[in-house]
Image (cartoon, rainbow, N blue to C red; front, top):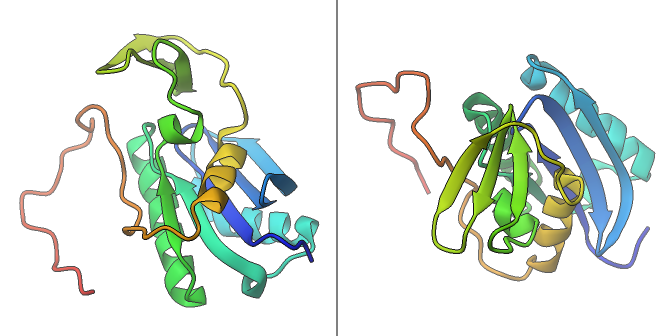
Length: 180
């Protein structure tokens, strides 16, 4: 087993299902499968596969992390729900990582491209453009590395980061009370 803590990171914020197992800065295993639908059905088998490739099990994890956005409304919610569930089941920290933080967030650079949109941060506001753009590194790997560096910090439960209103209609009734 690696000497650094092991972090599982996942990302379903766009038309893919991705997972990585990292230890410090080292990538033990990673995978990404393009798909427009069905991330919820394949996420846990994908996680099991990447854990096996890394030679790890659930009990070896020090934390679990996910990309909290920006990205696909449903995809982000799938990842956040999964990470929060794994965190509760394994009694380990759940770390939500916005894409811009994972990728460095340098002003003026295109830092993420999802579902036919580019997100450009100018240092104070976000501009959305149509079209694809290359990402500087696999986001699911960078989310894991970012989380591994912040294991000793206090973390709120992961929550989606949205940069525009959802295309779907939100429920009109109040959400259920969250118990601490």
